[in-house]
Length: 385
Image (tube, rainbow, N blue to C red; front, side, top):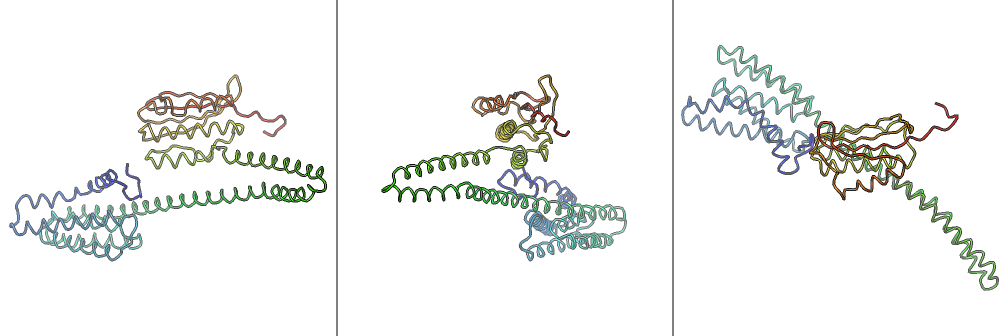
């Protein structure tokens, strides 16, 4: 699947983009038919064919290589100038059937030129087409229709180019934010480890020196120092384990962001909430939901062949109390993640450990659905509503 605003990666994406661009070559049907009908001399037909081939090559070069980012302005200006010159020369020499070439000139202007330049160049191209077309009488309706098409298609392509650039910038910004978040997490880890271990290790070093000095003269006090060292080291170990456990705990907010990224990268349309629900279960239950979301999204990406994935949260009132339900549904081939060895067994045990239930099966219309229900934490007595 071709990813919007990103250069094609591989043959399949290249062919997809080529097909999308090739659809717009329909305006070449009139020049090709004009050459095929034999209205011109053999020499004119050969020259017209070569000119048309060069025109198409310049057009495809511009829209393929320079729509997203321009690094070689000289090549762009040269190709665009050749495109304009060929459109004028061919339309003037071969007649009104070739006026459609100006549509491609307008599209190229909208695709590669900045908006401030395209706003002037596109009307200029339209006016040039009208001037060339006026050499033949009786083409008023054709010139009017082509003029409107040339103008509107050029401006539409200019808007598409800005949308592509915005998409690219958003991807770059998202990558930057992810990198900054990773850097911040590393700094936080370093700071927490320093706070946790700095004092303990300093105390262990000091008591070790004291024990070493006391050992020859006062073995009993040295033994007390060694006991203190053991106690401090055990407490430091407990602190480190608690800290690492906190870092490893999954959160719904983090997994929702990861789900959107993973689905988008795989070409699956993500219908994913931006934020977790306002009412969340306890930490262990939330971690179970986060693991379930990760497992479900991984199965969608790897096995489903889906084009769309929907994630939803629903709070339910049951006889056993309030529950929070997470559902992940795709429109793929069905049964994704339903086979043994895919992690669902361990996930079922993890959910059951927090008093929840996991259900899997076919979606309502098509595809696969995973649902997890966990109890919501009871509000404390006297807490504000």
